[in-house]
Amino acid sequence: MPRTFTVLTRNRDFRRLFAAELVVFGADWFVMVPLLVLLPELTGHGFWGGLVLAADTGINALLLPYTGTIADRLDRRKILICANLASFAAVLVLFTVRSAATAPLALVAIGAMAVAKAFYQPASSAALPNVVDPADLPAANAIAGSAWGTMTVLGASLGGVVSSAFGPYASFSVAAAFLLAAALITILVRRPLQAGRDVAGERPRPVHALAEALRYILRRPRITALVTVKSAVGLGNGVLTVLPLLAVAYGAGELGAGLLFAVRGLGALVGPFVMRPVLARPAWLFTGLALSMALYGLGYIGVAFAPWFPLVLLLVFVAHFAGGTNWVLSNFALQAEVPDELRGRVFATDMMLATLSIAVSQLGASAVVDHVDESVVLAVCGLVTVVYAAGWWLTTRRMAGFSGRGNHPEMIKP
Image (cartoon, rainbow, N blue to C red):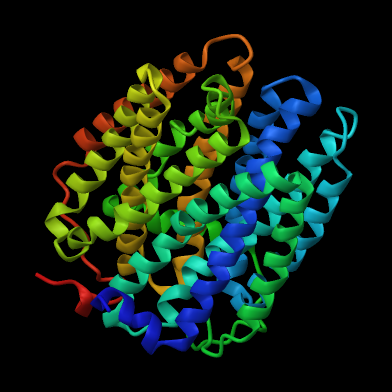
């Protein structure tokens, strides 16, 4: 077995935490893929898909400053379990979406799931360093970073297959079962998910805690750069609004939409493993981040002009190979820099900026998707990412990699 994966065999709690995250991400795609095809069919308008995606990311972003504080103040295990159960209840609402008149209930359900994910994500990211030894953190990050990509491949493709064969409501049933399973698996994690300090008696003070985290970020240029890097891919994320419509335009239907989201996940899965050597070479970090941003944008500019569906699939893979690399590199660097007592809030700020940029991009795309060709949306989103990447690189090119001073200096190789 490759050395990276031995942490799974050696560490039972990390294995369980990773398995729960896999199941959660899988449930997300068993909801999203069929819903993004179902809503345009029920309503006759493509903008509903954009609204669902924007609700998913926008609500999440608005709550992250608060939920990051909660992740630093309350029991992270309880947060993860409650988030899974809340998402399960939200999925049940989707069974009522049967016509154009009931389509708004999809936004209610997705909004509720977004609230649950806003609590789940910073707690999960902040918990990871507490279930592995410092020497295993690079490998654990590479594996954890693959969770989203793995389940996008499996969840998106299988969600498309199940929805095509048995209907969207069968896919929603699978998602509900997954979320219950994730809650059960998380209960079995034994290690504490935060450092040994008294958090039970602390009263969350979101405004004060967020201000403390922002001061920490703004006083450290390297941290500021790392929490703004994901916004490049986020501002290009309006492309997701047109992926289901693109599949229809090529005559591929629900199965094609599932394939597009699946190769998106495959790229995000493969990228972090291929680019893992960058994690051990701090001097490469900022160059790697800038190149990954630019490649994402160039990939989607290529999709805009691709004449064949197989070429579209290849270019989507390339774009998300770069996007997945970008995400994992910045996450690892933040975990190496930020102390445990601030990590939840810093990750919440990082994710808030990323998801706000995604929501802005998706709202913009949904506003024009019924009026312009899909290729225009794809090209503009890709170009925005390339321009952002260039500006970020010019601003940060003099910075070194990461120091690791805030957390685990021993794991950073010279």
